[in-house]
Length: 276
Image 1 (cartoon, one colour):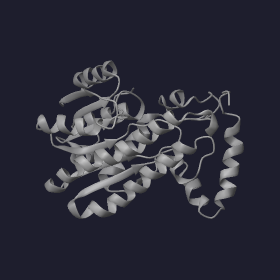
Image 2 (cartoon, rainbow, N blue to C red):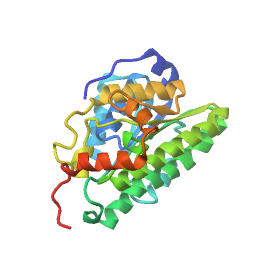
Image 3 (cartoon, one colour):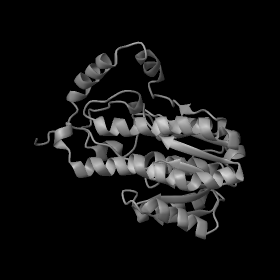
């Protein structure tokens, strides 16, 4: 990934603070970690793939004068959020920036998926987000400072046929983030929900998408830079380049059933051939 440059606004907001980035081994999580490091933030990096995390930590050390910690962990396991909290507390690391980025999706007919896959998706995309936020938010309130990013999605604004569970989890994340932001502003804490459209990452590969599903994807770097600037600036919802913000606005004036049917026709050709 390209090395981001230092941005003065982000450096003022995040410099010298400790950030926990989930799903940091690839995609948006990796780019968020790099951008935070460029801003002077110290990092706790977590994901399942230890080798990828170590490589990212080495990359950060070679470019930026910040501290890093690597904690390989699987957020599909219910005990993982507590383990991450205990590890940072034991090390005396005050997490002032919580990046709830870890997540995955599925493209296909609902009946061709499995209950186990959907259950894990809800666990990682929703339950782990709630648990981590419950653990780290009280300490932020005590310190009267903090930032929390919810990695939502453009899919959070309407039902998405053939991505039904994923879109529902992202709507959950966005609603949770927007509500929390209103609750905790009085304590000097900012919560922002980042809502990217199709972005370069491993998402499509994990979700089982055909290469034709999204012909145009945004580079990760401008998406992340926009999201972090909006987090620093206190915007509850962040619409990065290519997210389709105009469509979100227009959609308010259209029947939801119409929008859903249009999306169904558009995504039908992108469905992988799976036995039913």
